[in-house]
Length: 128
Image (cartoon, rainbow, N blue to C red; front, side, top):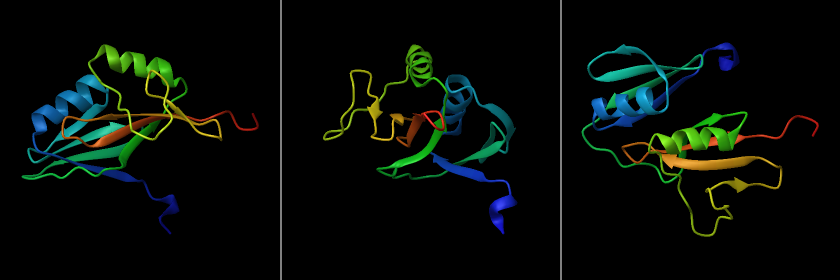
């Protein structure tokens, strides 16, 4: 049923100006519309709707992520824009904060200005 419908992702933010600066200015997402109470970004064909809320309790898990072809290059570009990658006790991460899973997938986590946990992932080539 919904397998052919376009997906829309949602995030909450306390300050839309700060959210816009981060998602547009730091992450490079294209703003589609500013509705005053929500921002809609183009996430490479998926709409990301960031809605302003009065109170926010960020989830303790990843809420949004991007699959990238070159994880460390993306990380470096974000670090140059002030993004700090997270470290988690008990999780095997290298000096940059990258966790390599048994499948070969690599993941690194960072937070948006409201504390929402975001991720970058690089997956091994199919058949590799």
